[in-house]
Image 1 (cartoon, rainbow, N blue to C red):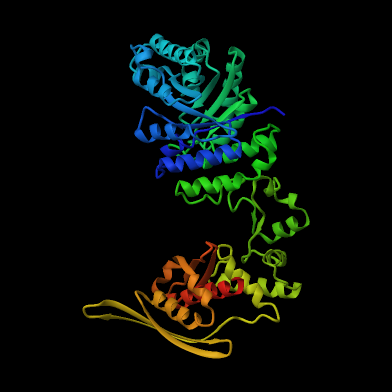
Image 2 (cartoon, rainbow, N blue to C red):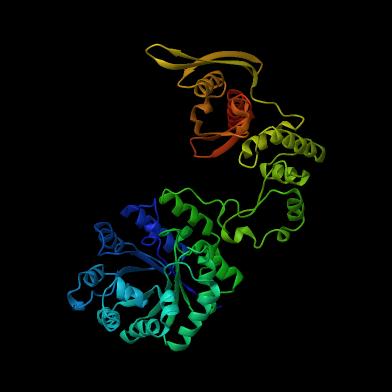
Length: 518
């Protein structure tokens, strides 16, 4: 198999994404993880642009990387100047990386309107910058910015720019689809034409503005590129860069190229989640290959087929990329959904019990419940269908009072009466709102019998009005996310025309689930 060189630019392009700002420590952590995964080149940033990147390049020198080379990124020399004295070029040199990536203009529009120089001077800027960096023993990757727009506007000049880099001694010519608007067949045709007119390796770098980031990257490889650039999770300016978490498995599993070892490919989902966590970004559950929903099956017919043959509704084995098949339970479920989900939970549910659970789920979802996002509540429904199931507590009654007290503002108090192991426990608690008071009262009633509940914390509380046209009589759905001291998380659901009742259902399920699985 031919090997495709992976060049990651998360630490530069990725940080240009709105809402992402990485500290130097963050960048070091991500660099280590990318190296462990088997990425060949890691672009660390633009050392001439900010002190943070300067510090990164200083610290990264002490890392003992196993697979990756660190690249510093910068522009060609400025117009009408000497390359030896150019501050951006010197910043690249001072970064002391074995690889430098130099970006230059390919589109005559940019040469004329942005650089405000002549076509000839731009060619000199490219060639002289590459020559100088090569004379210092650097591996030079040349990024031909806006190449595809430039080639469509003026093919002769766009070609001249990459030939200038080639004459200068560049090791790789990377054709950049910077505005993200090209279509796959355009990319493939242009890369093929450039491959016939150049003598060194080609790379492809695309953005996803038209939704074709992955397709354009694959098209570039089909046409002859052997080097692909992108970011983890597709982070990048505007809508983002080509997503390596999608590009890599397509190249390796679908097109037969070698990118990383099979063992490392099976860690792709973990890499995606790790970078999202470090970047403080919510994971995209809909992401191909690595998203939580990538192999989630909801329709009863689909699940029935997958249980017989997983290939019937899955394009790959999810374990190849470190993901897993998931079965959802909802009003669309069949008996197979419940049986498969029960097996996943380790619950022995008979076929007849599964049918009853399906009917119960359908009835509850008709009343506003949803179980695909509240798997803990779904698991409890299955456990309750077992003949020998004994709940850890049972509600007798509760009361919630909300009032306004002069000088104190709004005040809430809840009382809860529950049966715990045959003993009736009656407690009360105050809170800053009715649900908070109810939560405190229930915990107070249960903690003496179940001390481990002291480590259980509500991490999120979501309310959705399902039929807003009904006004204040609308059905309210409540989803509660809970976590314990080990950072295990689970979600539970309740629904009712009474928001307190909906909250109680979700809250009680949360505590019951914690006690049954703890």
